[in-house]
Image 1 (cartoon, one colour):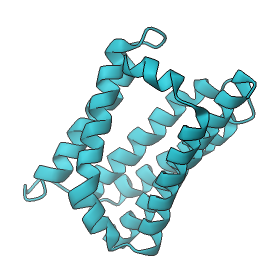
Image 2 (image 1 turned 120 degrees about the vertical axis):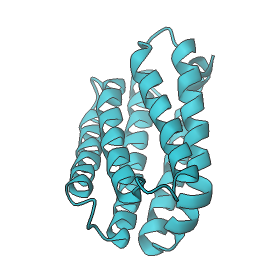
Image 3 (image 1 turned 30 degrees about the horizontal axis):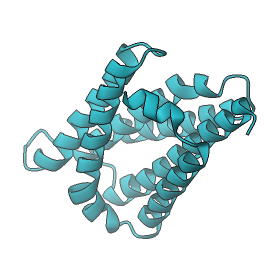
Image 4 (image 1 turned 90 degrees about the horizontal axis):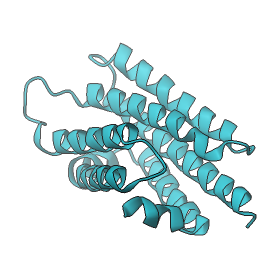
Length: 179
């Protein structure tokens, strides 16, 4: 059901959505203090809602397998709940969680690159995935000592790379539809 809705979504709406994600990325880069509000109040619930839709879409999809959307949706829900409720737990480390999120985002972009197969936009999705994976590795290799300002900067870059990937997917869809 959700997948059918997403496949009927106009590519223009997808580009506008990507623009919104890019604006959030610029806000985070230009105002790292916004990450505190974004990270503590808004982002967890966006992740939970997005993950829930992804899980529902996994069961309604006839074109894709069940595993990838179910896994990515579940990870989004878990990460969102951890961001919201696990801040006071001794084993919770925001830098570690952000590094894992960057890696998961890069992996998801690689998996969704096939949506742009046969178009010039596929390479942009690979580049966006590479940026996410590289940032995830940097954060994970130094998670215990990395500055929160650098993690905030990386979050802004992650949002910009996600916006680039979303735009590439929408424009590849436009090219395939002949629009």
